[in-house]
Image 1 (tube, rainbow, N blue to C red):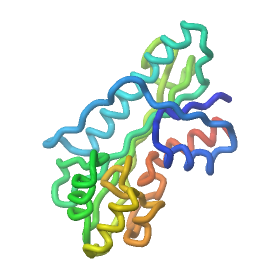
Image 2: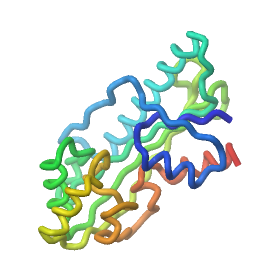
Image 3: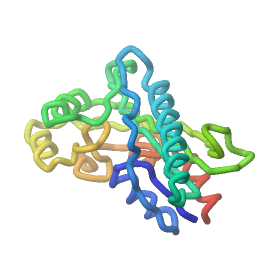
Length: 209
């Protein structure tokens, strides 16, 4: 089956390739995603952003297919947001620069926090899936995990910033990368922290394996 991950995340792509025995292509959405805001729960926001990505994906591929290009049979979209350990209404997405990444690591240092991932799978003409646009239907799952950071030293933070492991990562860290030695998964699944709602992967396995 032709499977598309509608994301620019190399970590998400590598995770899927490790789990699923099929060819997976990755291509980011053309549309800008919905912005995060303060004052609204992270759980609600990650759901809304994922749903907006699913709608954009369906619309974009409906247009592309009308131009004579074969659409994938399965499209996967996902969004991940870290919840500020001191304020559940403060979302921590991907830092834009080193300063933002440093501030995020300082807030996470020595504390436990939740990581939320919402993932949608899009398939055409499937009665079990909810209609979203044209012939595309979707199912969406959301899960969270709890991660604990050890107390980071100034040297730890400098190293994490300089190696750029923060780039493109919600909360400014990569659980499967350099931050692994400073973190512990307290509750939930590692996949959720790396970018996918756990139940969505089980659904993909059911479909593809």
